[in-house]
Structures are given as C-alpha cells and as structure tokens.
Image 1 (cartoon, rainbow, N blue to C red):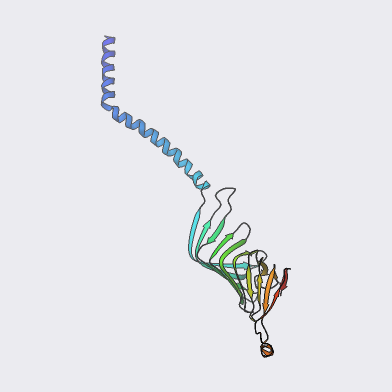
Image 2 (cartoon, one colour; image 1 turned 135 degrees about the vertical axis):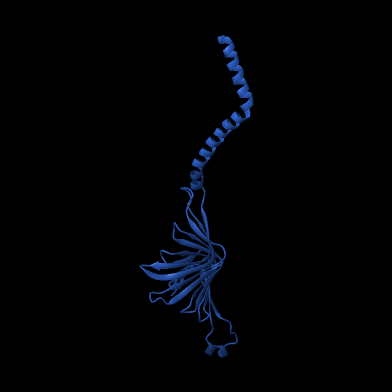
Length: 226
C-alpha cells in the first residue's frame, strides 16, 4: 500500500514538474536576473567615480577677485568643465570658442584686456594656457602684445611665453621677442628674450634724411622695457 501511494505521489510530482516546468524555469531565471541587476546597481557608483565628469556651460561670466576686490571679468561663449576622475587626473576648464578677460586696477578702472581663440585653465596650477591669435592690450597706455601661445599665471598676475611675441606701443615702437617674453598683466615690467626691435623716426627728422624707414636695433641678449 505504501509503495502504491509512493508511486501515486511520484506521478503527481512528475505531472506538476511537466505542467509547471516553464514557470519554474522562468522563476529561477528571474532570480538570477535580479541578483545580477543588484550587483550591477551596486557597481554603478564605482563606474561613475572612475569616469571623468563633464559639465558644459554657455555664455559664461566669471569674476576674478583678490582680497575681496574684483580684479577681472572673464567671458566666453562656451566652457567645458572637466572634473578629476582618478588620482592621476586633474580638473581643468576648457574654452574652445574664444575667451575674453578684462583686468581692473585697484580703482576698478579697466587697465588691460586679453583675447584668445582657445584657453585651458589648469586649476591645480592656477595657470591658463592660451593659444591662437592671443592679443593683450593695455587700454590705458595703448600698448599691444600679440602671439600664438601665452601662459597666464593667475597667482603671480603675469604673462609669459617661450614662443615668438610681438609688442607694439602707442608710439609705434615695435619689439619682437623671438624666444618669447614675460610681462605683468598690465604689460609693465616687460622682459624680451632674444629680441629685435624697431624705433620710429621722429617727425622732425624725416626731412633731414632720405631714408624715412625706422631705426632698427637687434640684440641677442635679453632686453627689458618698462
């Protein structure tokens, strides 16, 4: 009698398995999927931590201050902000579509301005790399600096480059630093490297000479211009 009951129960169990095999398979597969999804969800923050975050800004305006005073105003049509994604990465801001900066003196009077087609603000150094048609103008003196590459040290408030740079004053004095130059943000304390310059001929001396071209000077030594 026990064997008959066992056979009946076994047949019932096999019938149950055959009838609900697909359902059981679906339930088991669902358990594995849920387990896998749970692991994926836990791993998502780690993936985000390792990935460099990118923020995009349009029509950017940034005020530069020092000791509570506004010392400059930076504007740009587009900015990308890259955050550190790993210990070997460093955050920086990129301005791929031009950058303009106005610099103010202690009286909040605009004394100089900077323009470049491209800029990269290396925030960990507080330095900005500028390139492509870089122009710095002292609006008070009328002097102009032009070059293709320039570094802006925001801590020291100075510019420098080891690439050729052309400097022109309001009086048409031209100095060309073939190996670059250094200068403060207001274009004072200029130091040229391997410079070549031209001085204009005074108007009252033009009639006294048949050659009205500028007087040239060429020195291989470093020259300074205040």
